[in-house]
Length: 78
Image (cartoon, rainbow, N blue to C red; front, side):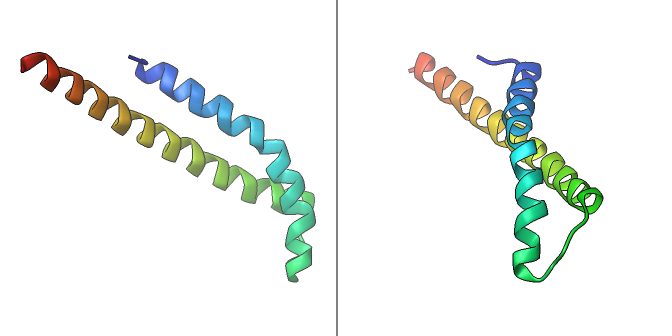
């Protein structure tokens, strides 16, 4: 079973790998929808979404680990 810290580190690495791509996309895609952005505002927006993504990934991972352990314990009791 993966530890809580390992879950967080995996989530962080996964999200960090998309950070630069998201920054570039935000900078170039927002203007296509009439929302011109400076690099600074694009960075802030991406940081907000990145923090949200890290938390979401962490919670989902912990729920699945809990369900896996619960399922494993129920099978050993039978």
